[in-house]
Amino acid sequence: MNTMLKVRKRDLYGLIDLGGNWIIEPKFCELGNCFDEKGFYVAGIYDGYDDNGISIIKYGFIDTKGEWLIKPIYDEAYDFSDVDLAMCGLKNSDLSYGFIDRSGEWVISPTLEECEGFGYGKTLSISKTNGKYGLLDIKGNWVCEPRFDEIMEGQSIDLFNNRAFQVYVIDKIVRERYSNELYIAKEHSKWGVIDKQGNWIIKPEYDEIAYFEESWIRVCVENKWGAINFYGEWIKEPTFESFNLFKDDNIAVAKLDKKFGILNRQFDWIVKPIFEEIENYFYDGLNIAKMHGKYGIIDTSGKWVIEPTFDYLELFNNDLAVACIDKKCGFINRAGVWIIEPVFDSAGRFKKNGYAVARMYAKCGLIDTSGKWIVAPTFDRLLLFDDELSQNAIAHAELNGKYGLIDINGDWTTGPLELDERPSNIGTASLIKAQKNRKYGCINERYEWVIMPEFDDINLA
Image: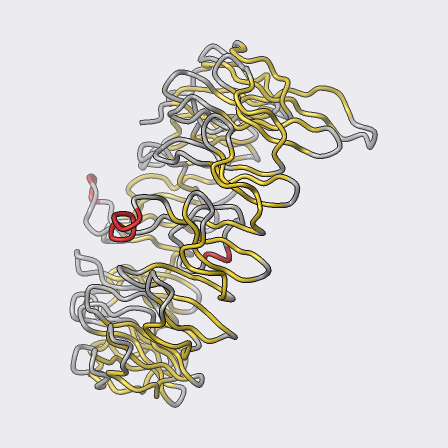
């Protein structure tokens, strides 16, 4: 658990504990994320100005008292990993990267244009030199020579929104087959799959490679998506404009000719593409679908459970679903019958306590499952708890720049506290970041000041 906060006073950062006491006085122009397990922390100090009058910052590593463990000589520095290496950069005409040990000695010289960190299970770094990507081991040896236009990593559905020098983690079946890491690589504008020595497992013949399933890979050719196995053989010729991952229900939503349908794992249509929209995934066998400009709910066979008659619709929660028509919202049951008529400007889902937030005439209140106002719509914003807190608080409330907790009668149980802006999560359950008179501090969940607002910024270290 993190027990420190990074605070800024004017242009300098320091560290305080969760009670607001100084651990390190503000004397650094930048501080990293947190101390590592051996007490190293990235810190930066000003080191003059460049020819354009822009401040130069040099980075090093400090201990828990703010003393230098590694002197600030680097133009960039990143945290040490569990293999005791930190990526650092030096700037001549351009930044070049390498890796240092905890004594500050270069283990891998700063000659790389780009690179990734080692550690946490990663034994190779995708690195770039002379405009090409390869794979470096922990001693700086090229396991895969830098000859690729890109190498990718990540478990994102759309890898091509990620940074272009990341390694793709393959599933267990593929790892067992090859007993090596596999990577997505690009050469001459085409993508394929390589092993860690740079040998092509699947030749670079594809415009995109998006993700791996248990025994196949989703690939794109000329804007059409299909699937190949790990021998590069087509399981499904490139046919679809898009299709999603298969889940436990063994179905996937796919798009063809601007319409959506449902596929089984053999890539056969179990529901033909007739819908204008289908949400990405089914929940409890149901999904939102759109036809003729209206929304309804379908099951996995494509049958309408709720006919498409709504302008907006959510899936069921506690047997009720938010539904909107003619710019008004209410709630329907599983038969599609209005249980609460559409009279609200907007509405949220019912919580376990049987209440929901609803908005009318730009103000929020609380309703019960009959649609009756329990708390009149007088607040600017309400955030409802699943269950009541102690002191009978049921929701966070905002009204005219004041913030606090209210009970089921709409009365303030704590606060209201006047603040400059809405409080925000700082990353620890016990503290909330708050601003007053343009200064930041921390309040607890009762809207009581724990750290008085005297800092220009405050965040979890």
